[in-house]
Image (tube, rainbow, N blue to C red; front, side):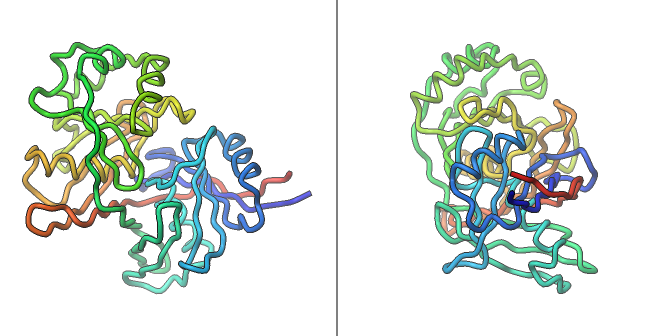
Length: 296
């Protein structure tokens, strides 16, 4: 019987039971892909992260939803590197520490702000944004249970990827977000026909004065009806907002999870060369809520 260490970490929050929970398997060496998928199904969270050694980076990290692998994921990255510092697998020296993770999309840096030996914020670098296909508003309005008039006029429903392709849907208000009634079968069918992994719906109305945007996220084909706080999509969303002139700044704060009882904050920084967005960084805090072992 094998025993592996597992932590459950709430990402994009500083308090337990907020933000987005991720399971982190700290010693995934030797696990098969099938075993990783079965463990992720057992954990039954949006994602489970598996950490192993790498010849190309400081760590090899893979992410699995309950039903499939995802190449790049935000909140489990925040959770993973919080856990690695907590376990002493990253030297807890105070200041800004930079390490690298090997993902399915390549090697990317992760910065960790450490204070008194504790990871106060983890900042992941995502890929340069790729803007892909656009979609008809009427089909998605129906699938989300809203009127087409509730979608922000003059802006595309478009796939944006900073490592994971996600469909961006801007809507007019928090009221619209609150009243979403997703038809998950219809959403899954549309997703299967598209070039994206999941769907990110957002508005410039926020609960907090600190925030610039509020979002909800759905991934029905990945076994995740609603994701509480989504780091990968927050990076793509920020790139979308800047590209289409909906915000005029390079540092943004995104709210998510408030409407389902798991509020979280995501901090996004963009770097540009001329009009082109070249770098996307997504950061947040995390807190461990469970530490134990899995037997199988």
